[in-house]
Image 1 (cartoon, rainbow over the protein chains, first blue to last red):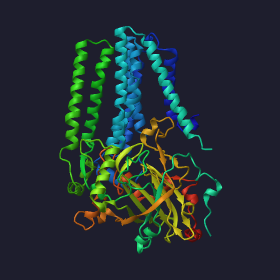
Image 2: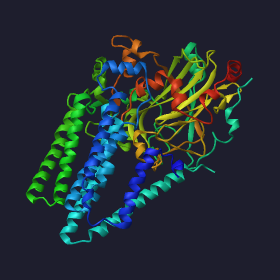
Image 3: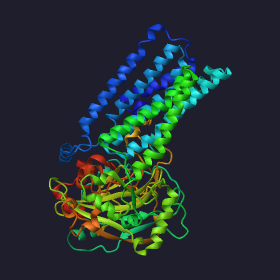
Image 4: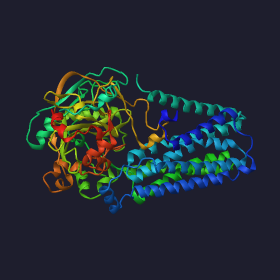
Length: 207
Length: 424
């Protein structure tokens, strides 16, 4: 199926993690309490995120001279290379996502409330990666890329605020929050599944 | 001897219909005169026939997705008729500050919700929320408009002046809209109608031609470039101004060996013998122009091409490439009365020939403009876009960045003995 989708190994792994997490949350619901041995996890996750961001910035400056660096720009013109696309944005986006996830994981573990980690998912999966695209797009002088990301990343924040509002209202009125979040998880898995199905259909050779 | 058509080994690949939608009533755009001297003669001899939707009429509604009319390749003067500019997002150190400030603003907006989830005191949550709201309002009302609008050129003369200063033009995006107005398809169509009705000479259909000598390629000696400027791109994505290009590759004896045309961020190329409209004394390749997007294709297929946008954000799509609803390009066969286009020959090396004070400056200054054309998702001048890939390295563009219909560039290039025959 991976071959049909045309996704490379890196994104295969990334998307598999997303899908599995969503699926587990949807099917099993959220665990009652994180065991104590899980507490260092946010630290490892955050460190991995920072490392990924640093790597991305170093790579970005190696591939794209800073705007205004005339010597570097003229060298690039004399020896042009294909325009970089995702090789620095991807680690930067993943790094952002990991750092943000670490913050929320830490809060969730310390409060023994996995719901806090769950509501962060829109920020982790939307705002964080698109923020990297926004930043590198503008720094590279590609405002179409930066502008697209700039207009997209607020949706993740909006999703987070919406879920947070839902959780706060649920606490206030005594709703079955876990049931609601499981339903939201199922909807998320369904959207992912439909997207994959549509793309498989579109990539099928014409008869 | 005619070079073998490489598509023969894989029949049906190049011309396979993908789907069928609509019945676009298109027309042929042909050059006004197909003979001339020197390089201009080459441009005229091999000028493409563009098959596109007819131009604007008095009662033409919005052109996309259901319209029967579309923007025509035109003089850039159509765009400059009511031009102003906005400042682009900052770059360099200011750009980094902008990024940091945006990040801080997002943290400020998210923090109150996180604090509330953690059970922080209400006073703290309300205080953080107030700070976030004030910061957002100030940014949206003061920072952003102030940065974008203050001190920006508001006419062609101002933009020309900015273009004379190295790097200064990069700061600006040209726009035909009021500075505070988001460009949208209906407004653009109305503006376009207004421009054309006010000045009849702007209604010309114009194609910009350029002959680029190629020194270091064993197959290609010259490239004929046909640049098409459109007032607006009205498709799945919309933006002011659009540049498309068709190219004919000549060998060292000025005989054609291949053709290429742009579509979205890349394009397609074909061996000359496989191009529609060629042969038996016919020298004008047929190219189909998609409705709204103005992407160009060598075949009409079943009326639609799936547009594949290999953009950075495509990594977020599950197929690894952006295939979204509406990203289909509709093309059609010519059934309506044909029209003519006028050729304007561009300077080959604007860095040398188009400088302030030289005669060519007034006419071609925009080739040196380093800013964007369009205030949202604006594109760059043909002479500098994609690090000059299409402008100065057209062989590399076709060979490495365009999709071949059926075979590789090296497989398709004829040997010296077959070139003359292939030229027909």
